[in-house]
Length: 119
Image 1 (cartoon, rainbow, N blue to C red):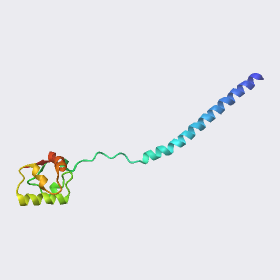
Image 2 (cartoon, rainbow, N blue to C red):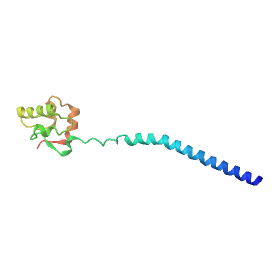
Image 3 (cartoon, rainbow, N blue to C red):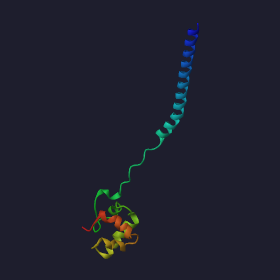
Image 4 (tube, one colour):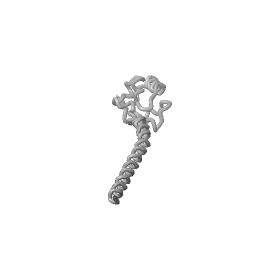
């Protein structure tokens, strides 16, 4: 009789352990599920921005205002100023002349140099 009682006690303890373990796993999963759902709804990181001038080189002496707008940091107003300067002063002989245009300083010129030609 003592052996049967011992075996029943061991079985009951094992069953209690399994039930507790199962409950603990359920609680952990339920806590993790909302976090996983939140993470799944977060937006993926944005790809690196591409510069406007990845289309190629732009000729400072031939480009239209629209073509100049494809350059990084050049909007419609500066593009129009470049075209107006070129019309009034003639062709650019050096890229540094671009600094004569209002809105273009050393920093912007350095940003533009890799994308410009004088062709």
